[in-house]
Length: 116
Length: 114
Image (cartoon, one colour):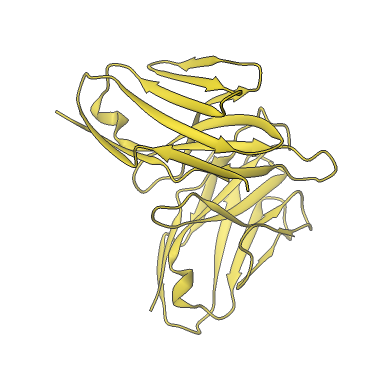
């Protein structure tokens, strides 16, 4: 069964601290993994995308890692800011070449709160 | 360039009532999607469209219908609303199937069915 799990469910950190969010998936055939940021009351916005051959991808203070062998990914946030408070969603895609649609499985998200 | 817009932003329906959610995008994207987001769960695909005049079922299509008469618009209809359809609905679009393109999401519609 295609599934994406994330941990922790929620996290509170002090401004300026670092944190790491985890994503485990069982999706086949694997195509790519994205991390999205969803601010309260808004739609998700893509932070990074990684394919099978990529181990690390950075976007400013956000660094994503991927271990395709263990089917795990992490999102590391450095020097957190109040504006980082949001839900972070791990999204894994599977590609089926004979269809017009790639199956996209969304994780439940990790709710991050950065406090002063 | 407004991106992806959704109307309405909020709606309260009584059980059995019907309504239509409108999604519009001004980016000339071919692919459009309707998702629902429930607490503790990931977004789930309701219906999608790979181009004007085409629609297809997603993961949770029961109780919903869609239409894509114009490329820029994707409508989601609830013919007879049920409390189980209380959710936040997101529309998204992307240019083509190419995986390097991300999906662009609208701001969401919060629907409550009493």
